[in-house]
Image (tube, rainbow, N blue to C red; front, side, top):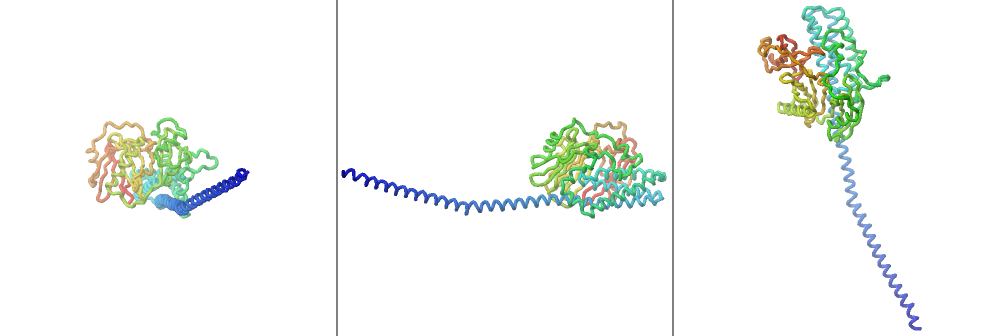
Length: 485
């Protein structure tokens, strides 16, 4: 009986012991949990939170810097375009004034002088328009009008100097041109006064994406002449009867959009962050026009021809705003960059001719050299960012229109025989055998004599077969580089 009575007491003691042990274990576990919670709070409050805050602040600073950098790029381009556009408005005004003088002038000497000034102003306008984005909605029609006007002035000037009076038809045409020039100037001036060019439109994709389509014009074609520009009737190199020539440099089969996309992507390179089709152009050189942005925030536009998948033009925001003309060493370095870039694209034997610089961008004209002959029609414009040394623009339209195999006259005079036809007042500094445009359909082989007369520079072109004087250009050197007019 005693043994039976002791069992419950022993059992109870065991149970109490187990309960105490469990309580101690729970207390220890709770302590561990509390310690872990405290450690997590310490890590989060004193380590992770500051790190996260620093990361957020860092991202904000980086974003602000990138935004400021992108704005600087766009501002640099906007300043360059605004200056070119302002100068273009001034040149358009001068053209209108010169045309008004022609309407009231009778003296052959005055007429010849004024016509020569008009031709030079048209050349200046064309050079200024070359600085503006090539897909600007007004540039194609306006540029053709100004080119034709300048050549018409040349044609009349030659006629006047030969003693031929200006006909009634020419007088009527000059009056029509005067009216048209007034509309051109008024439109350019209005846009400048309103501030709609370039500050607002340069920031939009539409500025670079090509001609806006109007109702009923789904193709966006630019082949039809603009009615606000009169048709010129004369036998000059840019007469409208010769403007329908097809591009000679396009080779290969038609490419689709995806193929053109890959070609454009390869040209832009791995630095492209995004790119998409902006529009398609259906002019004499049909193209796929893409727009996108680089990893550093700069925007770009690039056009690939539908036939053959050739690069038609490209524009990338620049990175700097260097003033002044490059020195000799920098000029050589920029030329070397341009040549290597063209060679990588498949354009061989391209030689630099003249260069200009605007807001830190060096614009170099490269002409194809066929053996020892410089072919000026086969021209490619290359823009190089002087700050980064990168190509930021290219325009191959002249090359694609003109490039083809050529045959040259066999019976030509020697360089020395041609030199004897030059004025004794000129000091020759360089001589080249060149092929220059005679009309939109024909070319003429000439000796090019780069010369000096006093402090002035000239380029004189003499017919390589006859030695007759064909063209004389004055070479203007200023803070923007060198330009032939």
